[in-house]
Image (cartoon, rainbow, N blue to C red; front, side, top):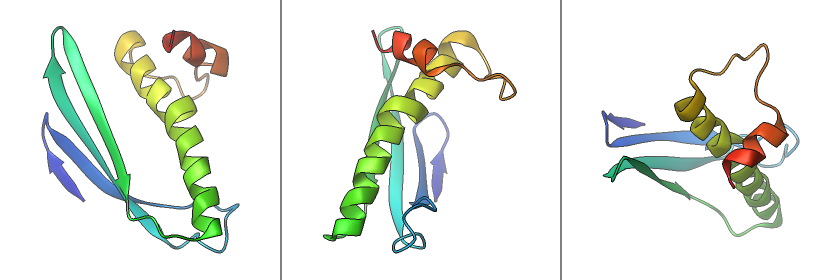
Length: 99
């Protein structure tokens, strides 16, 4: 894990419970924040993958989570303010951000 304020956040991430064969395995995630025009560009890198069908299923899971859930929520947070976790934005609200 590493933190460089305004530049980098890195951490390890284990697999979800529905993938018990690889649940205890971890990948490494790095988020780099790069100032750009009036905003910030985010570079995401998730490394440490193994060549295995269970890991492939995990890759598909994380790809969906990053693209359809985590990154849209992050964008929502920075465009609308803190998320009310008792009433989080709907999937439709998050999809509208990507357009």
